[in-house]
Image (tube, rainbow, N blue to C red; front, side):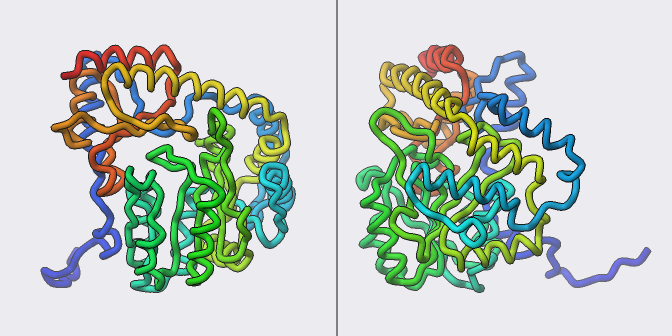
Length: 391
């Protein structure tokens, strides 16, 4: 069969795909596989995937719903009315923010999906999208896929890992901005006052402000996470996931709430690229939001115990870090003389411990490493013991 010759300049992949960063963790994955083949027990503190099972009352709601033939049909694009009403009630209970379920709430196939689709709805070719560095890679990648121009704003330790709003003044022409507090990977938190300041900047310059609030319910000590929408809804949307709050990472359900114009734009993309969330999962989501919340309190206690075990160990090892008030991550400085990738490889090679090098989250993540609290206390204590042997 003859093949059409398009010349030597022809490339298989689109320019968008070629702009995507290389898979930084391929080398770690390969070394992890080799270590496992050598019979070494790997302790994986790299992945932000909760090990705590989904609460039983949520699982039971799913069991009942999946037996109902009505849930086997196509769901609505925007999500079940009952689920969106449950989200609105949850927001009012949690933050005293009122939402109109029909216009200001949209069901998502996990918040990652909604975040990734947002630039497609609003960003024209070449328009700027501001995103945090270090930060969740999807902010930058989704901008590239939408043919926008990703512009990083650094999160520096000397500024408490918060964006410098005065530095953002030179980017008043941006179309969209991503924000994330409590923050992945730094675990840093923000105040309501900070949200008021950043929201005012975005509203004045008509920049769509997208707040990724996936870790809002994982907080400790005297801290309790605010919501961006407590500053108002105009030009603002907030993304949530049931993944972290209710240990439902594999279920793929989340939602976005806020300015109805922005919700409408995201919904328009979704109606053309997916068919919504399985109704049985949405019914389980209702059970999560409306059911007993002791499971969330228990989760916070578990992560606090793990946090305390890890930071106590890291102190003895001489690693420097800030005690996290939220999320299930500890963001620590790597020892002097190592890059973040070198130290991550050393931990894996010499101790069988997987941690995420900070550079994987962007240029300004260099010099740091992220540990996830997604293993029991005794496993974390074992990891610390192993790290004592790393030189």
